[in-house]
Length: 491
Image (cartoon, rainbow, N blue to C red; front, side, top):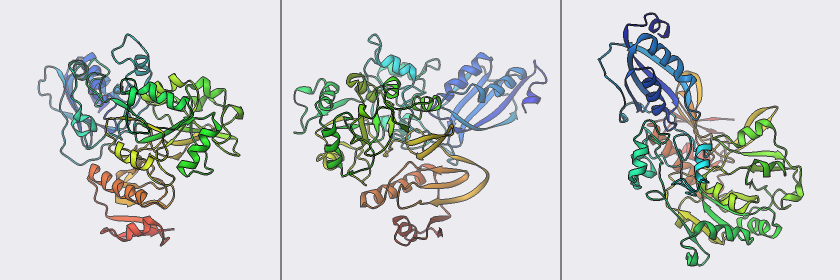
C-alpha cells in the first residue's frame, strides 16, 4: 500500500489506517493530528475498541510519508503492535480533526499500565512559577495513572475515575488543544479542579495539619513513625529505612517477619551511594515503568539491617508519582515503601478500608480523593546478562499483552496458589492481569475473583475454557471447578 501511495505525488488519495496496540492514553491522537497537519493531510482520527482509526487523504506522496512515520515517531509510551492500511475513495475533507471515541465493536484494544512521571511534569512540579507547582496529581499524555483508574474502554475521561472532577477553564483549554501535551490527557487536573490530599493522625483527625498535609506526613516519617500513603494503585506503608527500631516496628505490625522490604530512594545519585547501578538498571529505574529493581548493596551501613536481613541486595526504586517525588524531595533520605496490607492480604485502595485494615499498622495516613478502581502493586524485576527479567508484573508493565502469531480461542488461565496472576488468550494476544499475590487469605481470593470479572467485563471476554493446576487444594483449582465454563487442568 505504501509503495502504491508513493507512485504519483500530485494525485489525491485516501486511506483508512488502523493502528493496533497499547496506543490509547499515550498522546497518540494529538501526535497523529500534528503529523497529518504538517503534511497538509485532511481526515480524522478517533479511538475505537479495536485501536486507533485514522482516515487520511491528500497528496499521495504526503500520505505515504504519513504511513511511514506513524510507527517511527509515535509517543514514547505508545506500543504499536500493527498498522493496517486500506486504500479508500477520498471524500473531499477540508481539514484534519480528532473525533469522539467510537464505543462499538469487539474490544481488542490494549489497556495501558500506570506510567511514571515524565521529565516535563517533574520540571513543572518543582517550578515555583508553574501553576501546578507542588501539585501531587499533575500528569500529561506521557505519564500518570491508567490501569488504576480505567472503568471502561475506549480510554476516555467519562470512563475513568476522573469523571467526578470537572475541569477548570485552564485545564479544559489544555485538554482541548491539539498542540498541547495535555491534549486528551484523561487524568488532567490542577489544584483548582483536581484531586486533593488530606492528612489524618492516629486520632483520625487532621488537627493543625489540615492546611499542610504533605508537611504533616513528612514529620511522621522523620519522627520514626509509620505513614500510610494512598499511592497510585493502593495504599503503601512508609518508614525511615535507616531507622532500625522503626523498620522492626513495621515488620512486627505488618506480620512480615523476614521477607525483604523495598526501599525508595530520593534520586539516582542517592541510590548509587548504596547499591551498584549499571547503565541498564539506571534506564529502567527512570523509565515509564519504573519498577523495583533487585540490586547488589555496596554500603550496607546506609540502610537498617532490618530492611533485608542476611541479604546482600536491596529491592530499590525511585519516586514514580508526583506525590512520591514531593515526599522524597522533602525527606531527602531513603524510605521503606511497602504494600499497604497485612501480610498475605491484598492492598487497601479506599480510605475506609485502609483505616480498618491498616489502622493497627500506620501511625498516620496521607489520603487523597482520586478513586482507585483496582489495586496495582509495584512491579519487581532484575537485570540478568543485560536483559530485563520481570519477577512480579504489575505497575508499569501489566496489562500490556503478549502478541501471538495466531488467533486462539478465549481461555482463562487462573495461575498458581502463590504469587498469583491471571491471564487470558484473546484473539492474537495473551492478556495478563496485574500481580494479585498469595491466595491463603479470603480477601486475596476475593481480589482474584474481582480481577477475573473486571477484565472479562472490560474486554467483553467469554472464555471457552478455564485452565487450572491439578493440585486439588489450590484456591485457583477450586475456583476453576466451580466455574460454569469447562475447566482444563495441567501440571
